[in-house]
Every structure is written in C-alpha cells, then in structure tokens.
Length: 245
Image (tube, rainbow, N blue to C red; front, side):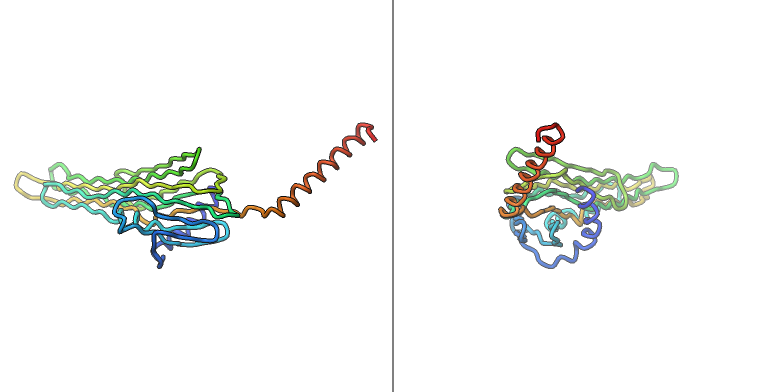
C-alpha cells in the first residue's frame, strides 16, 4: 500500500499548482474531507487534486500558502530572520459502502543557503529548516508521523504513509508544520560586508486517502454461502480419507 501511494504521489505533486477549485470541503463518492480547525479561518482552503476508484488526492492549499518561500537576506551584519508556522485539522467522513485502507501525506521542502565571504575574515552564516508533522486519529487509533530537514539546499521530499488501515467511519488528520531561515552577513573592521542569504519553503503538500468498496450484503451472503459449501466439502473429504464413509 505504501508503494502504491508513493508512486501515485510522484505524479500528483507535479500537478498541485493546477488545482482550480478551492473550498473548505471536498467530496467524492467514497469520502468527504472537511477543513474543521486551524489558524485564520478566512484562509482555510483545500481542493480536490485527483480522484481514482482507489485514491482521493486533496491539495492542502492553506498549508502550501503559509509555508512557501520564506527568504532571509542580510547585507549589513545585523542579521535577518524569516519563517512561518501552520496548524490545521481536516475531518474525513467515510461514506457508506466504502472503507479507507491507507492514508499518506506528501510534500516538497526547498532550501537555499549562501554565506557571505570576505578575504581574511570569518564567513557570514546562513541556516534554515523545514518541519512537517501529521497525525491520524480515530476512536482507539492515534498514528503520528514527522520529518524535518535542517541546513539544507535544493528539493527534499516529505513522504509518509500509514500501514494498512480499516476505517469505515469518521477520522481526523491534523498537521503541524513550520519553516525558518536566518542569515548574517560577513563583516570586516573596515566596514566592508558580504551578503548572506537563506531560504526555506514547503509546498506541493497533498493528502492521499486510499479507499475500497465494501461488498454489498448480497455479495457477503454469496461469499458466506460459498465458504459454508467449502467447509462441508472439506469435512466429507476428511471423512473419506479417514474411513468415515
């Protein structure tokens, strides 16, 4: 299941920016996802990114906006800092006739670091960090996941998935994430400086929910009938093999 969700996400992440519809609720035939808690309710925003019979992909637009592109640049030696945090909760209501068999969250962190340098002087400094934690909670269930990158450059993927699940009712997924960057220019006693810069970002965050239909009652009846017939046949075979007639 983890491999299935991870493979799907490779294509999903590239398409996040193309999501055209935004709202606080996303509904499909299998599940309903609602943004229920978080900072700044006026900015709550999720949207349906893709939908197959097996997987519903929801773009976490508010998280993406809160944490994308936080640069810090210092040219004079006083130092500069930038960053932001995000917290939110979505509720997933599983519709009748379906089960949720897995949940995953994928996102991309991006960082840049550039420490200023001057001849015969200590260099400036540049540092950054990106953290994403999420939790699946339901009656009798609590699954935490987290990942963090510090002092990093380039793209770094966040990718976590639950093990197999069997959820047929309402559950929640909560998010706690942050990015930060700080920079201090290099300076010399003669007043010369060399700029330092850092950047941290989290974007392309997607909630992936794997779903499966539950057999209709008639299907269960047929299945149980078949199992009963198999049991009778097995007993007869055993009896013949052991001289029971």
